[in-house]
Length: 273
Image (cartoon, rainbow, N blue to C red):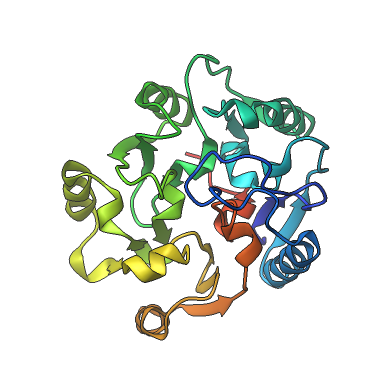
């Protein structure tokens, strides 16, 4: 069976040079690039045991390019590249668009007036044939019909209300077999109702505030493996009962920028519609 392909960007120029989310506040210039490189390398090597890692070349002046989840959303040979809400990240767009073009993806021409931040805010369900798409902070709801049309997937719009969880992949993680790991308080009441209507109670794993703050939901799921930052023993036990093997990789330096394992990756082998 073919292995998943996952896009990553080496952290050569990573840093907290500005604050565009609450995690960055107070951390400008307050990280160890040497430790970040060690943690990223361990994450890459861990992923490589279960999937094929593809690299995009890092660029000077775009420290958050390491977070490839925000490059865009991919399904089959189609890609919709991001248009970042924070102006600090817009210089990344040309690099990601060029990479998609050079690698044979059919790139959707999303209007640049619409904010959209890729797989940070759009996640394919692992049990149903739909796409969860966030809005409220970084992705505008005006992007949602474009995703639905281009990818021929039903879009379920869910609204974020806690600025600490500014992308849905920081608080919402669809897992193999139709499971969902998520932090309900990150969403408004209507969105929570949409989630519970789609995912049965016995398939929902609720993440505590403590684990959500460790970016537990920002995990990489490859079959029955979940690669994540360090989390509580109780959450690991719940995941084990659901049939998953947890592989912890400390990612403290990336948490200072508001990201963890999932943010550092983009799955390139989503099945076509």
